[in-house]
Amino acid sequence: MKTALIFGVTGQDGSYLSELLLKNDFRVIGVKRRSSSINTMRITNLLNHPNFEVVHGDVTDTSSVYSIISKYSPDHIYNLAAQSHVGVSFNEPEYTSQVDGIGTLRILEASKTLVPEVKFYQASTSELYGGLGGGSLNESTPFNPRSPYAAAKLYAYYLVKQYREGYGLMAYNGILFNHESPRRGENFVSRKITTELSNLLNGSVESIYLGNLNSVRDWGHAKDYVEAMMVMLKNCQPDDFVVSTGNCYSVRDFCKESFAITGNLIEFQGEGLQEIGRVVAHGESGITNKRIPIGQNVIKVSPKYFRPLDVPHLLGDSSKFKKASGWEPKYSFSELVYEMVENDVN
Ligand code: NAP
Ligand code: F7E
Image (tube, rainbow, N blue to C red; front, top):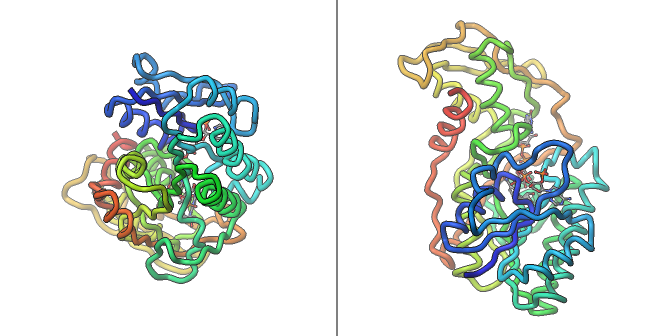
């Protein structure tokens, strides 16, 4: 039985990846950082699994990284640990660099020294591109990081390449585009919309306050994307691969789709800070009988959620990875949003 070590096991991707690897007969060791409150909610169902173990560690602590890798001698390492919120990285740039940048260096150094035969997966990101061009992005597209998060991830991306080319480490960069799920953190825009929609339907809020509604993202389902991570290490030679759906939608589209699933149809009017999303009609069906009054302004724009720099348009071209691995995403955008809305509203 092969052993997989996951840094970032308590996150959205770490939890789905653990489930998938256990189903595929891996022993899974998950690294969890110390927290003053419970941070294992997403992996509660796995804690008694005989092939699953959680250990304390932190990628900002070199000794913990070395001792965990030395103790378990993993066959595969997945580095999913990160301060993963782009907006927060503007307020905590040094911390973000320590975790997302130097944290990756610590794991690579320990891997090179202790387990040079390991396969190493790095959670790279479409944020590397900056999204100013508008076209479809692949492995040859130049990078243009537009946040401390993206800059730290770019540093980590190049380290992975250097350890692969310089030391022969079997290291992979998965350049993953946005992926969401009912387990997505509630301060990312997708899950914020679906949780706040639930609050609206319960009457506990009257409007949802968002930032840049124009942003366009290539949104996929996290379940598809953790499968991509596993098959990358199984089917592909060490390399850099874009993982995306090839379809993109705006934040505005995400709002409209979410509301429509509940039988409340919205339209947007106005511009900039004055733009609002308003209920204009009721659908005959929906996953709930609750209807928001026609005319209610349910989406408002707040400058609080604007970033000093934003990434306007991300659309991925994952032809290289599809050809090398046989991977295809199973979820459409509509199915993703439906699952998230159903989970939060019900
Ligand atoms: P997430 O839900 O925010 O999970 C991040 C994980 O990292 C959590 O388990 C977190 O622990 C852990 N972590 C944070 N700081 C740490 C530290 N100092 N030491 C050890 N662990 C630490 O993120 P995700 O959406 O699952 O994403 C997984 C990875 O893919 C991240 O590296 C992210 O940057 C990258 N990525 C994500 C997307 C996406 O759309 N989801 C796209 C491209 C790349 P706590 O639970 O204690 O906070
Ligand atoms: O923002 C805009 C925001 O925070 C998406 C991370 O997983 O994917 C994620 O980063 C867009 C941005 O994700 C709000 O300005 C508008 O343009 O959901 P997000 P992200 O920044 O794309 C990449 C691939 C990663 O690697 C990251 O780890 O939506 N937006 N209004 C808003 N965003 C938030 N969070 N909240 C708002 O109210």
